[in-house]
Image (cartoon, rainbow, N blue to C red):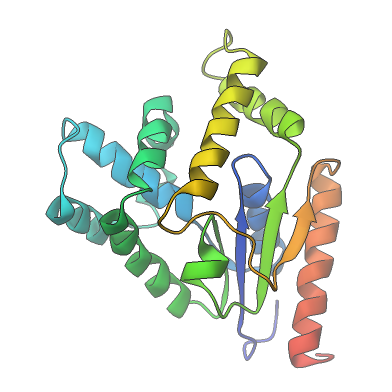
Length: 219
């Protein structure tokens, strides 16, 4: 967006493989917004815990949280299966979420145009976001998407195993006591089940532009 006086912040939430990361990146790239995937923060901590022989406490996590940079969050190591598993486990811990919340808040404060995606962004991290999106998708389609991602690393993985893991992850996310995955009352539901990338982009960009128009009028 060309207008320097515009300040617009978007919170995007949703379950695993619902399209929130892809959607967030599409919005950020098209409208020149700063983008953060909060899941990479938990993956970064998980990676460091593994490198530290799975030993960690509040002091260790706080130290790791302060060392995070956007460049470090681009590491391919963050997407190793063992990192993904551990990241979902530590995400249930209050002191981990507290340490990583500071990074997210600072990132948001420094950006006039920003979109952050995760599972508790609209409810906990950006409760006053200008636009809240909640991504959803059928389990069958989510499993197919995640299978395509996993097959690059393991061609022997089966669809039923991926679906089973997603069902468990969704259960963990929605039922955890600390910052569970919920749809904020004022969020816009985005069902990506039948959308391809091009269709998703058109839908999301229109949603954002209409929201900006509501806030600022015709620019």
